[in-house]
Structure formats: structure tokens, C-alpha cells
Image (cartoon, rainbow, N blue to C red; front, side):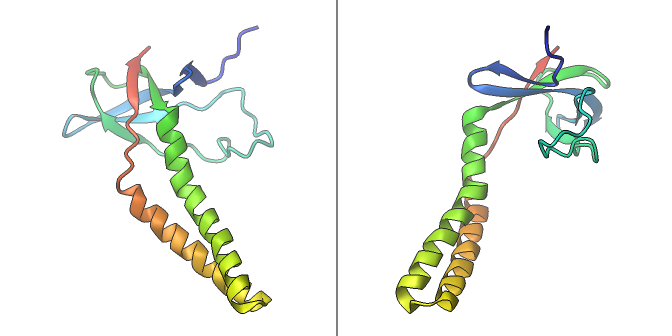
Length: 143
């Protein structure tokens, strides 16, 4: 039996989702509404698709698509992994390294707390700084 998921794997290197062109914007951009899985009834996966729809996505109209046309939007899995690593990995690394630095410097729980809090803030700020230089470029394919 074939699955009817809207998320599919284009190849080993890309993750894809189906979308509908909702409007054409100025500057050669197109606004897309991501299509949710009709079979989704809110499992314990935590994706929260059933409670709110995904915000519209604006990307370059490279295919000259039209309103209400169905397209497939694909993102490189490598780019997605690097973006996730910077967004979530740097704050966690800062939290843990700050805690180790705090316990080794002060030798008590307060030092660990202050060090971990400082590391978390530093990691978050570093992640936001690096976010400026990471660009995830989705690819639009017609259905």
C-alpha cells in the first residue's frame, strides 16, 4: 500500500513537501501555502500541524508558476542539518561548556548555574550571528 504523505523524500539529498501557489508577489517572488497531511489527526509526534497551519513561504518564482498550481518544494538535507546544528547545537554546546567552566572555576552549584546560563546566552547569540551567513535555498519543482 502506498503512503499518501505530503512530506516525501525526493532523493537521498533532498526533503520535499507539496505546496499550492497562493499568490504572485512583486520582485519575481511567489507565495506558497504548504499542504498538510490529510491523514494527520494529531499523533504524539509533536509536529503540531493539526492546531495551526504553516506560515506562507515566499520564494523566487523560477518556474513561472500560476496561482493555485501545485508544486513540490525541496530543501537540501545537508543545508537543513547545518541550519539545525547552528540553531540548536550552539546553545546546547554553550550551556554544557558554560556549566563545566562554572563548576571548575567556582566549585559550587551557583557557579555551575551562572556558567551554564552565560554559556547558553553566548551560544544563542553566536547561533543568531551565524544565521546571517547560512542560507537555505528551497528548490521548486512542478507536479
